[in-house]
Figure 1: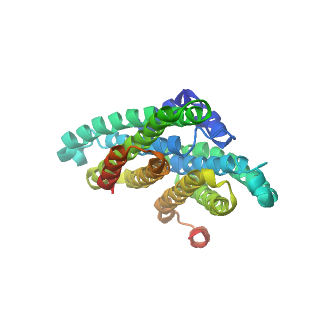
Figure 2 (figure 1 turned 180 degrees about the vertical axis):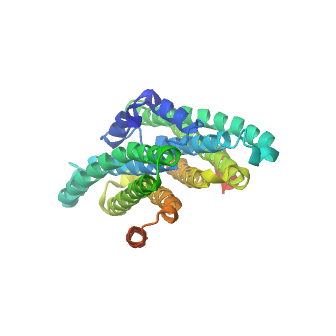
Figure 3 (figure 1 turned 120 degrees about the horizontal axis):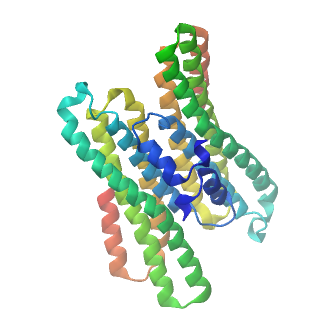
Length: 180
Length: 180
């Protein structure tokens, strides 16, 4: 698993000639970092007298950001696996398997983009109601969530035109429109 | 060292109540990810017949991106240490030590921003001359380098007004202007 590797080792593998992990895993990692920052600012808000009125909402946001962080951590590995399946299908197998692998390599970054969008919405809210001493962290969470959305969408758009199934393509295009 | 921790563990610490690692380390990590993607695309360009004319330049870019990646990896830890020194100085010590700690906590993100800017310039060039099959990875490198610049500058701007030394402040403001 990529996420069990050290940061240094993961970055070494990223920089290597092997195309996975690549941009798709980095999109998911950006989203996970953004969710981590949101959770941190929530925890720096919980139990503080100055923020007594927002405690219930902040606790709810924390639960959601931690759920999204876990999802995005999973997607770091899923993206690399999806890419490897595409390469394998092109090398070894026939048309149907390529289509299946490409669909997976489209759905994974789409899910990453959707999760990053949710993290962005949480960050926007926490910037308003959360601990003001950590405002720069909340702003950085927004930057990373936005980068994650854009990066993931780039990967969706690379694979989408290669898929033959028109209905699938339309479904994904509709989902993309909802994100922007 | 933070960068020797697994990605999962690092993200857990990020999400914790402890303010370090925070946005500053994430800025440096974004830059290191961007540099990693630039290096990957360089390696996917080296030795390819189609890109025979740019081999020398791509090899030079790879050397620079790997140097920047190492610098940015160091800055992930240095930012957390700088923040912890500020907290320590405020808790235990007198005015001069606070000033010193704040200067360090300003210089570290400034260096991060400068390195991210250099990575961005490499990514822009590689998008033009590098392997076109990895164009989405180069674009994602640009997104991450930009996020790293903005995130690091946010942290510089948080600490700068707290520093008394006018000459230092002017020097940093001048350096910031060069980045944008």
